Every structure is written in structure tokens, then in C-alpha cells.
Image 1 (tube, rainbow, N blue to C red):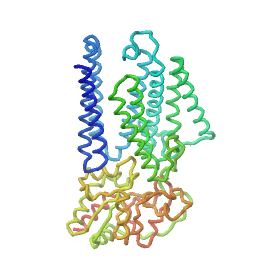
Image 2: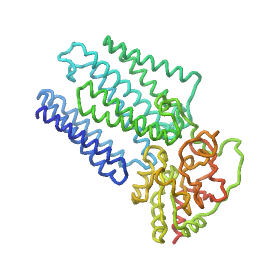
Image 3: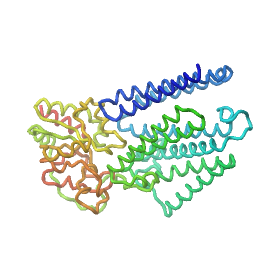
Image 4: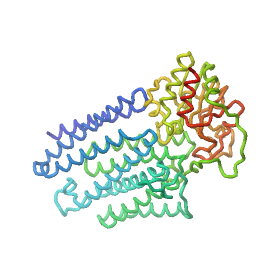
Length: 482
């Protein structure tokens, strides 16, 4: 296998990754995007194995066994985890995968620092690593360490504060804050930069080791003050970090595939984070610096909150309203995922469609616990893609809708974002469900959402609350519609 062929194969893999991103930008092409991504990764892995053999028979025979074992173990575990993961646990799986990418970048950087000749960075053992490579290793290792520890904290927060079956305050959904937190974070960040420059200029391995340790620490510090409401942005941000870590290591190893793939992931993750920040009325720079965070889900109604009357009804009442409508818009939220009610929802929508009722789904960019969570949830139930609309596409239609059915969503339909300039979510773009003629809201209770705010939508005269588990409520609606 010649170097020209290797370059061509890596280029082909890069084209596949670009096509994967393009395909994943829309639900109708997402399967094709995944296929391109798998094809690109397959080409990259096989080409790398071929490159090992090309570098020398001795290297291939001594090291290929470890590579094959690692591929088998990692591939088997990944397949098993992906097949077993529940839809509500998908964000945790994504956070776990991000952490592994970051840790891999750290391990590669450490190996390159200790044995640079083995990775082709220098010609022989004992030769100094060039300053340019030292800078790349510093950046790759630091970003990788931040990605790993930050993703571990995100995993714990997404899992509700549990880690290995135990509850830890560090992983709770509410922001973890302490006096002088931002100043301390700034000092740690400056220390990482100073140590990185020291390693770049002098090659001091001790400076490299300390900066990696501090990077692990700062990864924890920038995520713990972020509340559960902002976890979708955090997941997207950590995705971007993992890409930049891979790109940094790619420069050190002179591996064009790592550079291209890492840059694609890093840039696309950063763009997605920016889009989501706009959707939540957040500052992008505050996200990057870990300087934001709202209150987590408070569970029961806020302490001391005035109990206000609401109009409630049964599943039969809701089915009657839906069955007599001409147009229905469904707003899915995390509560729908928790109840695993997407298939019951699909059955209800089919029943309404058979009666000539127009059914559409409205998706908020940050609904659920990760980017695209609701899209994946509906796709699992085989909801037709042409019925699913993003916020900007469907907001103008709420005013003409006969009924809006809100399932487990809260903050993304809260009118306070538009009507109350003093609200914590003021200015946040929302799904304008309040404009519909009739609103049906299904929730387990009157508990507040992740932002910890009361929702004025629930108290409107045209709103009917249907309390209970989403799956049970939807199944009862299906029977009532029949």
C-alpha cells in the first residue's frame, strides 16, 4: 500500500464524513447520513491498519494484535450499549462517548510525549520533540482532558445525580456553586495556559503532566455550575470539544484523517451550540466559559408558591376535543420520552388522521436532554418525517390550530418568555402553543420544568390539564377516539 493510496483513502473517508454531516442535518436523510458515517469510519480504520503494515513487518506483527483486540472489545461494547440503551438514556450514552474521545486524546498525547519516536514524531529515541508538535500535544491533551472530565459530570447530571448506583452532590441537576468560583476557574485556566507554554518552549514533561491534571480539574469546574435546563447545550458543546481534541492530536501525528474528522466534529458542534444558545436566549461565550446555568428541575411545585386553580379533564375529554378538531399540533417533551409513550402517540395520530384530521408535530431545538432528542424519539415510532416541523417552520401555524396537545413539555411552551421581561427565560424563543384555540397539556403533576418556573400556559382559560403518565393517558385517548 503506497502513501498515495493511503492519502486517497483518507480523502475518501473525509468525503464520507462530510456527506454524513449533510445527511444528519435533516430527518429524511439521517439514515443515509449514518450510512456515510459508518462507511467513512470503516475506510479510515482499515486504512490505518494497512498503514501499520506498510511501516514495517516488525511493527505490524508486534502491535497489530493489540489493535485487533482493542477494535473487537471497543466495537462489541459499543454495539451492546447502543442496542440496550433506552430512549431516555440516549443523552447519557452520547456524553459517555464524548468522554471516551477526550480520554483517548489524552492517552495518545501522553504516549507521544513519552515515546515520540514510536509515533514518528522524531527520528530516534532521545531526540527532542519540535516546538510545534509540543504546542499541538499541549492543546490536544488539555482539550481532551477537559472533554473527559466535563462529560463525566454531564453524564452524572443527565442520570439524575447517580453514578455507579450512588447519589453524589457533584452530579446533581442543580448548579453547584461556591464563593469565588469564577475567579478560581480563571486562575486554573491561566495556570494551564502558562504550563502549556512552558512545555512548548522547554519540553518539560513535569509541566505537561501538571497541565493535564489541571485540565481534568477545570473540566469538572466549568460543568458543575450548569443546571439541568442547559444540559442540551452542554452535550453539544462537549461534542465540539471532543472534535478539537482529536484535531489537535491529528496534527501531532501528522494524520490528515484525524485532522479533518476532528475539525468537522469541532466546527459542527460549535455551530450547533450557537444555534441552541440562540434558541435558549443564552450567551455563546458564557456557555464556552461554563459561566451560565439555571436551576434544575425542582420536582414538586416551588416551595411557597401560590396554588392557583387550573381546568383539568380526563383522557375522554381530551379525546373528544381532538376528535372534533380539524387541525392538531402535537408538542412532544421529555416527559413523553420518560413514559416511553411515542408508540401510543403514533397510534393516536394515526386514528386522528383516519378521520381526516391534520396532525403535525412541533419540535423545539432544545426539547429533551440532547440536540435532536425528540426527533429521534418520533423516528423510533416511525412518525412520518413530513409531519415533523422545527420551531421556525411551524410557529406561524399555532394561531390557526384547533387543538395543541402538549406532552411532557414545559419551558419550551411557557408564554413568560415573551410576555414577562423579568422572567429568567425572557427572550427565549418558544413554541407559541398559547395562540391555539384549545390547549391540552399532559403532565404527571404541576411540577415546574428545568428552569424552575411556573408556566402561565397551564392557567389559561382555554387550557385543559390532563394529569397522569403519558403512555396511560395516550392509550386511554386512543380507546376513546375509537
